[in-house]
Image (cartoon, rainbow, N blue to C red; front, side, top):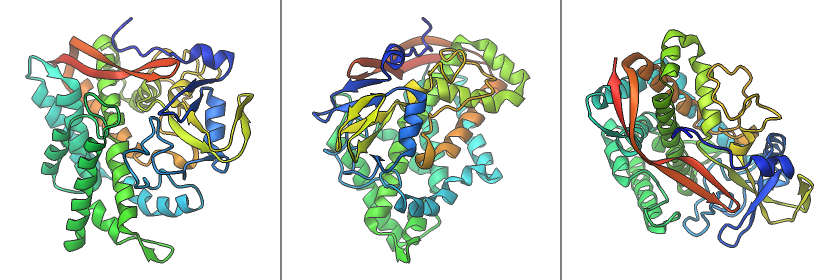
Length: 385
């Protein structure tokens, strides 16, 4: 098995019964595995709720490390639509030519820098730096601030010994509080200031609401972007013909990005809280229990995708759910797609091949399933064209 391959640990359970089970901090979760069930439940917000106790819809649950509600992620309609209308125009800015030009310069500079190195640790020395620097554009704050976030390490809520570390999380919360204070004292054109000046139903957003949006922005786009970037580089290392093809057929780049995001599914799943006794996959789900919408399993459903366990760069029909589905479709999807699009084009233009020198897999334990989500570490050598 190649290092870049991600197997599908959900396949047998998806075919046989459509769900799996896991115990998450004594708050059990039913994991929904089929594409149709995942999409159906994601759309049915009345029965499968996002607006539960803050942190409970995340798997693993974050109820013990935060009280702030992430917005609009942990809010249901109709209020969700009001928050979304405030923030969505801001998160569509990556479509602007000026934004794309700045992001292109950042990524090209980073690729040029590491192309001269004998060894690059992709997770910490490439993907984390790329993600953090790109985030300065999304927040519209000085480029230099990225260094602060890089120094936090790869994960926002996770330390080396603990998958949920309250002390690590407090670093982010304290940082955001300080930035909100700064924006209140001296408003600018950054996201903090824009949110503080925004209104919902005729009332300015509260400090807690602003903090909720910012926590989501920092946490939601960190591990996911790092996983997408790292896994794609590993794939191109073991499939150099793919880089050649993208260089010669740039018109398929958009489809290739969607396919890489489908195959690698940077976020395995996301939870919902059941509001009433119901059934999913002919399995009883009691009120106030949790289900998870397993994006990674849905993306490998052979009932929907031909050759689901292969990367088909020019896949034409690709209803993947890596960015979620329905009203909770990922706010950062436009930003993430631009990062991947520019990165792939830059690698195709500047890199002839990539050698994997060493790697250590990152495995998620999900009850009966163990899923490789990427790498804790992978060292490579970029060979410039």
